[in-house]
Length: 271
Image (cartoon, rainbow, N blue to C red; front, side):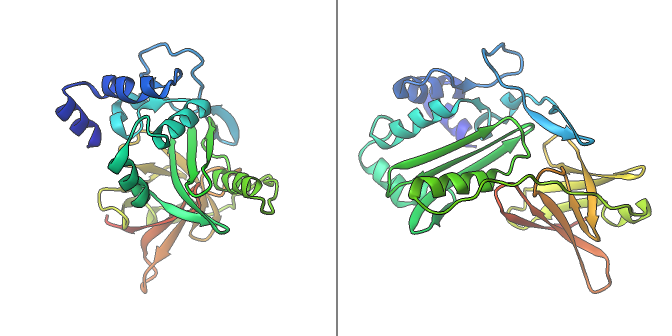
């Protein structure tokens, strides 16, 4: 929505506005609006695990995401953007003060006694997290072209290194699927609506003897592997988990998605 507001107010395309008012003033050179139809130098390929094997993730044209995730960049460029955002290059005066005082209108938290502002994102084969410590003038940026890395632990360990707290090296995660009667999958199949936002929906699909998960608006479906009764994982090397909830009649009534950033997202089954 914001990208369309920008276009309406400025009379410019979103890509042109971002280039003229953010990219050029910040002095960054490897950032722009991604488009599968264009040849972009050094563009990374996103990867995922399919049947236990590392393979290129299904391609989606993120250009269609527009202001909700259509830009490509590098950690170096994002750091330059971060500095330009806070040194008065991009925002000045009352606007800069209001942005900081209102905690950027994104998730805020803390590491130890240090206030942090966090924004995480993921698309097919890619994952990222931006964390800023406004009181310390420290920024941590994690980008990866494997969508199942333990992002939260990596970012937390980098936080600990920066602020001088104890940290651990991430351990290898290897989860094992159990054998179940595929007849039980029919109970999970259906549409689910997330409590955090009624516009967020997902679908669990049964295809022959397998179960798949698909988020609304995302053409990619991922297979679910049973780990325990009512608990499934997407990839054996990630902590991402989908846990079903049941009512008093033992019918599946919803699910809880534990995602890469350590968040638990609850959803109710609607059909």
